Image 1 (tube, rainbow, N blue to C red):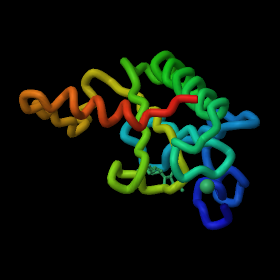
Image 2: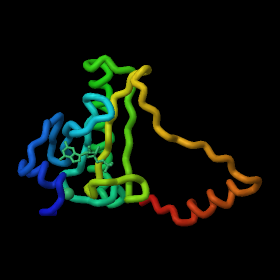
Image 3: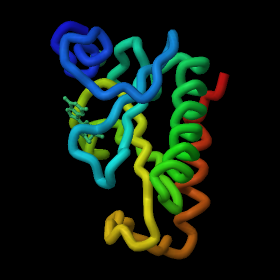
Length: 139
Ligand code: 5GP
Ligand code: ZN
């Protein structure tokens, strides 16, 4: 898509620091990292949502992200990594070309996800599960 900033990065119209590339995916350093080395893995084909990425490409994204995470731990002397994907504005997606974040983490990196933990009211859990399952199509 011509107006998409990540499509421009893939095409070389906007410079990026490449970490990995193959026929399906491109990986490059995030310009505003949570920690140094923070990488984005994107499909070469433009998809706004991760849900429309073909299975082979989505699988490759996960594989590449995991391998990058391992490389970060070893070579950047980090203790772990987060994989993060925001799908949709409500989830915090800013760039509308699907992307998987690989965030290197250190035990004392002083970064905290604001991850709340709600409690289900009595009897609510089963109903929620039923609704999700009723619309689930894995093919
Ligand atoms: P989102 O919030 O959509 O999950 O993440 C978008 C990410 O893209 C952000 O972390 C942001 O720093 C990164 N980003 C946005 N524009 C550019 C750019 O032009 N170059 C690079 N390397 N990263 C970008
Ligand atoms: Zn794009």
